[in-house]
Image (cartoon, rainbow over all chains, first blue to last red; front, side, top):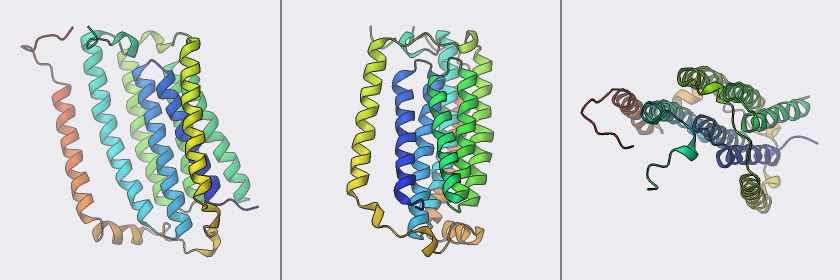
Amino acid sequence: MTIGLNDYITLSVILFALGFLGVLLRKNTLVIYMCLELMLVASTLALVAFSRFHGMLDGNVFVFFILTVAAAEVAVGLAIIVALFRRRQTVQVDELNALRD
Amino acid sequence: MADLLFYVLGGVTLGTAALTVLSRNAVNSAMFFLLSLLATAGLFVLLDAYLLAVLLVLVYAGAVVALFLFIIMLLDMQGGVRPPFTRATIAAAVAATGLLTVGVLSFVKRAQLSAAPVSSDLPVVGASLKSYAAQLFTTYLLPVQVVGFLLLIAMLGVIVLSKRFEGLEDIK
């Protein structure tokens, strides 16, 4: 049995779900952020697989843009986390409740 | 051979991703995240996207994970050890993840992707640098410009965010 598109997509879905699980489960902002990146990588894998199994390049080119945007996103997100830590001395999401009361 | 590699790399990707989610220490999480990215780069090689595999290692495993580790150590979150999960959190998270997985997988199964051609019949378009360049500088020229501008904006944003403003009132 050869590995087909279905196997790659299934792998990508499970990876995405694991990232989603991390976002829901963890309280540390940095780990949540890592899990978000994991979800992005999962979608990237799906794009590359679709591209390969249809003999087109467009999916691969999209991965280029996803990589660039992810890099920019990480830089800005981590700057926000550092600014937050400076102000509140914590990065745990259950202690960041300034908007609640 | 390629099949075996797919299973090995896929297993490593999923296992290390799970360990990223579950490990007690934030630094360990970052290290498992790094391993997961490397295995994903291996999967890209299996899909003949060599350039993207190299870029994934350079940009993600190089820059992004290094940045994460830098911030984890800079903030010094008491070792970053997490408290144990509460039962309600586990139940809710697992239920939501299960629903997501089942939903997307049933969608994938109904899309009849198995009818898609096998890779050996198709031209390998993702392997040569030339085809990327041709696409990026013709069809996708405008997105390239937009992404370049986005990087500039992100850089400005980070500079502004990491500057200290003295007169600003605290939101505490």
